[in-house]
Image (cartoon, rainbow, N blue to C red; front, side, top):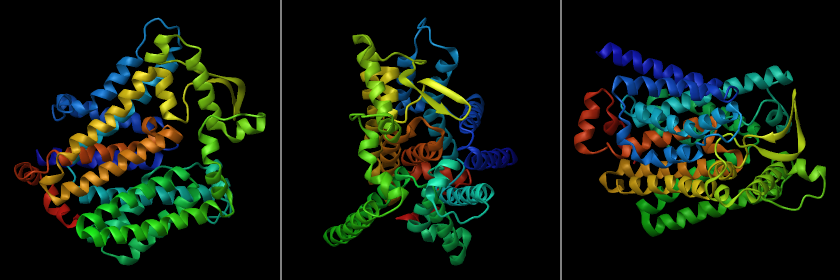
Length: 427
């Protein structure tokens, strides 16, 4: 029996490594592999879906998006089912991991896999440009991509849970190298989304660490750090370079505006997508506005989008995930989508008082939820394979919060996880 558990654990780790390396380039990899894992443990009887009513809003979204006889193409309908079910599978993968890996070890895995992905990214950069040192982040962003949140999470865990991570790596020099490596890759991502998501994690954790422990003095310390971070952001926005320019243009790029020509449409493409999504909804019936058009609906661009080897005048996926939900499931879908986060956080908050570890876990799940919803506003993050590890982390932390009691902790220890013992140092 022990050997079977060890084999399962090894396979889960191997799958996570595969998703970490290949998940960004091949978006189907996180979905297919997580679907196989979740399906296996459901059939085995180790995963009982009836325990996770918190996922009901996401299931309702899929039901709401289901239509019969709308005339949409099958490939577009199936694509929407995959996108809408992907967060559920990622969440459940995290639930499965909880029974096999302690929180400390999960952080170590994230650090290891994030570093491996960063090395892979730099290898791609070297092969693409002939050098590991690329002067312009514009080149890496549009030639290789903006990567995944994993290096961002690696940086956060290494910086703020240094002692826990060092218990495994046992080398300050190695951890310093990991911090520098992932920091460089984050710079090459040139992603405002990841920068601000990183900031969300930092601010929430510092607020908890300072204010919760040191009260008024902690509030003063946090305020000082907050002012410093605001100053750094101000300097970054008003600086020179591609990233600074993108930050200055963020609001224009994200929200509907007046388009005075082809250049403004291309330069503010996310805003144009949102503009056309809004037009699509306005052209629909009252039922469409309330319940959406269903899965398979495409948004007409009123112009051709030229991509390598393909020309599109209709698009199935939008950068703005809220607009994506609106087109497929209407105003009701938007409400349900927001309710999922609120309900999850309300249920999780009731477990804070149980232990210091639970307080830390709640701060982490709060930061993850805010970050992934912020990503959804800009890059369809909640429904994208790029956010697999964030959603997995949310599922893991949710399971952690509802099992980290004295009685359940003993059961957890008996399954060779020792979650409670290893995470006490986190507080």
